[in-house]
Length: 171
Image (cartoon, rainbow, N blue to C red; front, side):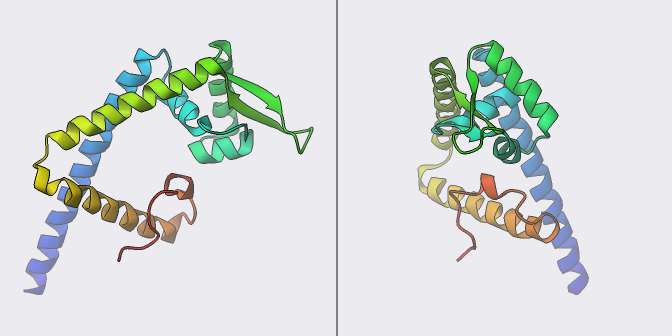
């Protein structure tokens, strides 16, 4: 019985991994398509998203939110600045520091990308049986919280910026 339990757990773990990989790849593709329609890469779209609703974000904080190194962020911002989507401003509290903020064109591009992402999510929900939609989303929340808990063992705080709107623990 114990051996069958391990076999079942292994099969479920493989199925979970395959499912998450497939979902991740599919959402990455859809995001890439949406971003390319707006003239930016997915990395640049993520930067626009991270700056949305913010007056200005210090570059160190922005890099942390995006999970990228300073050199990558610098190149990313330079391209966005060249397109007129982002501008760098001096930090009000520290003249040595710099913040990034969206221009009006950047706000419009970020809003367009966000609306396309939401439309894609709505399309997915519409394809699920109505009676299971809420449970499905709740189950995905449970998976995300479990991922957070498992991640904390090796990389404490690594995904905090991605988890702002999710509960700390499953109930």
